[in-house]
Length: 383
Image (cartoon, rainbow, N blue to C red; front, side, top):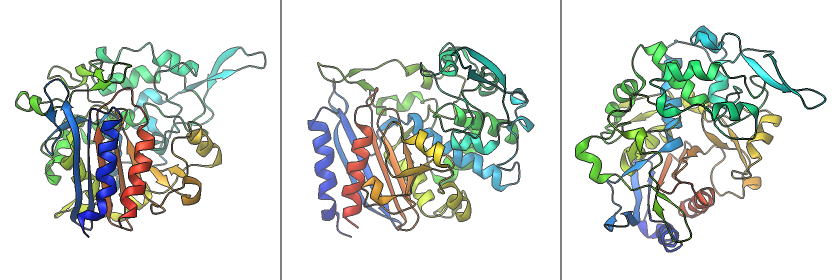
């Protein structure tokens, strides 16, 4: 496949930067061959340090796909079943309650009608939320200071004290569910979450630039995180504490750092059915389960509310293309992946054995879903 066919992707990256993005990069691998790798703009605008293959980015929620992969490794080893009550392993969730609204609008709580199952964490159907102001659960979560929480199990216990937004399994709501998968991994493996990822995923795949805490000798390769403003991108230092050497908590839902090539190796592994260069991370049938839409009609409507991913359902921690016509997509039915809060995006396609990773660093993100859709169209047009 000629790299000339990816001229549309080159043009897109340049256009993104011309429109105000500090910098970005993208790689495409098909059937073991890197068919495209492109870079545009800068990792740091002040010093005009260009983005390159060894530039380190903040993954934010692209951490989640790694977490779900790690949790599925333990599923394959028989440590739990997807339908198991979460409380069998995290006892703090033994008696969940739910915020409900009475006929006169009064807010009250009552016991959940069913337990949180492990699969609900993968599916974002647990009733756990992130911070926000749309529900009382979000408002209570917003009172937590993440900087002051020392470890995942402490985080789990604090979340378990907050009533859920809905009965487990009945709705879809983006939240801290995958962080609780990180706590589950720690309990079942007997290892700190980051250590498990390093030993079971990063080292076998040769991902030497992927970690929670950035080593001193690699700080000069880290992108500056920016926020959009009327004057142009300005440095955003709000989340710098996540990756300091003295930060002890390792979140399952965000916080990892990685490079385009490192995360590309992880995504390649998924697209190849769980194996890369002799390292078997997951079985192919498990990845097929991961990339199966697990939502019912009500949950799918919840996921579609923001209108950012038309045509997609949701599997075990990943969006899944289910309706090409609805999505206006030239990608394969079954293509799956996720994105991050700073605008990065990834996709894996088992049928085409295709993996795509796109990296940028702008938070709050602007138009990242649109960028993902446009990249998807340009990349699949080259096949």
